[in-house]
Length: 123
Image (cartoon, rainbow, N blue to C red):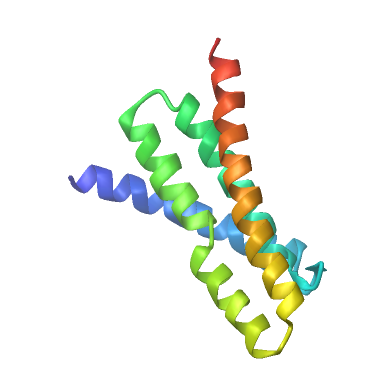
């Protein structure tokens, strides 16, 4: 059990660092259709990555490191929720609706795409 916890923790730390670099480094202050581009990009990319990993990860320990740890640390649903509330409180109803709708639709589509790509790579 300790080994699994350490594995998940290491993956989570790496995912959190990469999320920080993307959201607060590369895309800091950028918007997409009036909503935060960093959080949207991280969640969409994380959905694609988790789909790929679910299709390709060969072992339980690799899954703990990459799916549970890295993707869990990398994706930012709580930040997405807070961003949506901030947009609503600011009266930015159009961008808030676009952000929520696109985030859900794109992330589900990207997870499916990642699973499909992973299945193709397996064969």
